[in-house]
Structure formats: C-alpha cells, structure tokens
Amino acid sequence: MTDGAGTRHRSAGLRRTYLSLGLGELAAVVVFVVAQPVVAARLGDAGGRALWWAMAPLLVVLLQGSAYWLAARGWLPGSGRAGMPHGLALVYRAFRLLDPVLLAACLAGLLLTGTDGGALVVCLLVWAFGALEYVNYFVVRLSYPLAEWFALVGRRRTPALVRDIASR
Image (cartoon, rainbow, N blue to C red; front, side, top):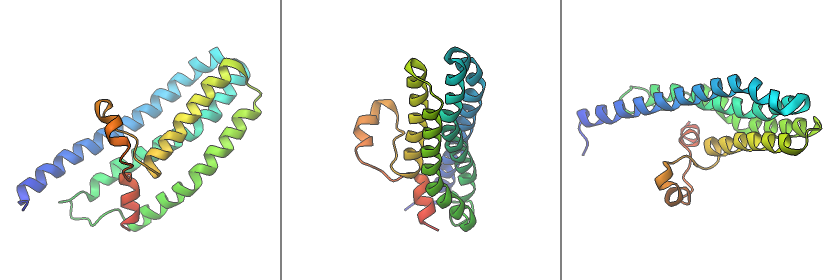
C-alpha cells in the first residue's frame, strides 16, 4: 500500500521529469531553428529550401511533445485532476491524424525542391527524425536510456501520450 507521502514524493519526481522532457523538447526546437541557416548555407539554395520542408514536421512534433509534457504535469497523481482534460485529448487525437499528412506533404515538398546528392541525404535524415518522433509520441515508445534501449524497445510499450488520450 502506498502512503500519501510516497505518492507525493513520486509525483514530485515525475513533475521534475516531465518539466525536463518538456523543456528539453523546446530547447531542441530552438537548436534546430538556430542551426538551420548555418546548415542551409552549406546545402545551397535548393538544399536550404528542402531543409525547411524536412524540418517542418520535426519542429511541429517536438512542439506538440513539449506542450504535452509540460501540460501533463497538471494531471499527475496527487494533483487533484483526473487525467488529461477532454478538450486537450481531442486536440492530440487530431494531431495523431494530421501529423502523418504533414509528414507526407513535407516529404513531397522536400523531393520537389530538386535537391540531390549529399543535401538530399541530409534533408531525408532530418525528415526521418521527425517521422521517428511522431512514432515515439503516437505509435510506440522508442525513447529509452541508451544502455537499456535494445532490451526495452522490443517491448513495444504504448507512449504516455497515447495512454493519456485513451483515458479520456
């Protein structure tokens, strides 16, 4: 049986973890946006345009993830709230459906820029990172500590966001 103090302690730890995750995703967005002009300059005109197409879904999913982690701090055990608010769950259900459309549209945009060679490879890798972030948030959890990654990723755990959406 768990006592109130134990629940509060675990909840405080989760609040710190969720804050770290939310701010970490937000920091990643800032880093990608700041790095974009530097990388684009090395990729040429078409490569720079292709890079924006590649980065757009990545930035969107990272912002969605950041907002989720920061908001989820408000419905942890002991917060007095009974899970993700219904309206927010509806928004994230829409993201779950619209993000693949965004990924497909941006991949088409990237390919239509006419970029080739190394610039195309860089842009496709950035786009693939965005696709993996989508999978990590909305399909199956992929983010684990490196030392445990191979042992845990095979368990195909449901992402916390999907569990929260399903609970509403």
